[in-house]
Length: 168
Image (tube, rainbow, N blue to C red):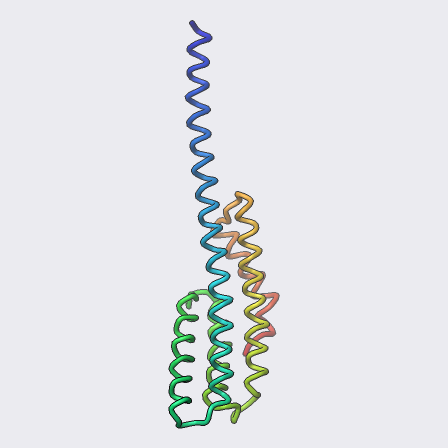
């Protein structure tokens, strides 16, 4: 009788434990998938933005094509900014790179460096940001969610490594 009772208790405990682990695994899998889609979406938005900027920089100012290309660039700029968090220093720096590319496209390279250089700087920085996000994603996909403190420490390390000498 005691053996049956102990087996029943152990079975209930195992069921509850397995249920929690399964829910946790599902949660991690879901969050990982969402973050992977965010990374891919940001990569695509930045590439489209750069493409629109380059097209606009080659268009003749004042004609209908210029106006259409400007609208496309502005839309792409807005969509890209919506992917970013203005409270995050890493994202704010990415917005500064976007601004420099947009200004170079509108001014058609008349002021400062040519747009190609600005786009290359944007791509280089974006690759660093995407690598940072990917590394966080890989860490969390192992079932080790990052605490707020760990996230902040990783951001500070990124800023020290990449932003101190990378001001657009």
